[in-house]
Image 1 (cartoon, one colour):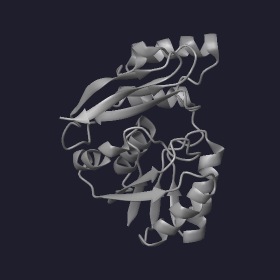
Image 2 (cartoon, one colour; image 1 turned 90 degrees about the vertical axis):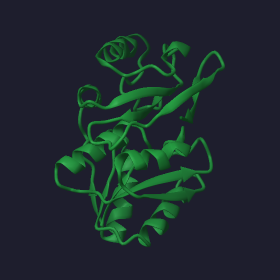
Image 3 (tube, helix red, strand yellow; image 1 turned 45 degrees about the vertical axis):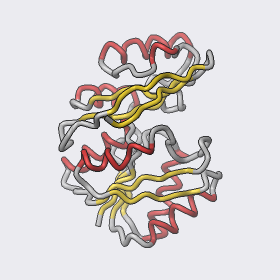
Length: 217
């Protein structure tokens, strides 16, 4: 059985899309739920939506709870994956050596093949492909200079990509959000069975960083 690590964000969803197209055929979605928001390894915004996300994809979901503490959460993930009898694992890592190395180590220990189709690629090239792939991506949190409250809830399109590139030159941010500058949610994609229907309930903004509050419709 092949599992796919997904958070609902653009990179893990795009990696899932590529895996499905390349005959890897994941049959299980795996979401990691850290207890801490400052997890070193895992995305944390809007994970309460993942059951609905899995319904849209049309695959069962396995939720794995971890402490969110550095290194300990890696051991906790490996322990949980051990019981799933996986043969392959898909991830959306692009440039985080910390993340890629630890997933590689988990897979090596468990005798599982790690398929990471985005790894080592130009993040901006990947970002453009994600936008052009037909995925509908919204920005759910921002935490970098140059990214103001107006970015919250904004759809990622080619115009937004060009603006992110300009901000990257001005402020030094990673335009693909690889440094945690922003987080995303995919609400629709060509391979989805249905749209993820969410409603914005408001924004939290402290003058530097912020998030949008979402609920399911």
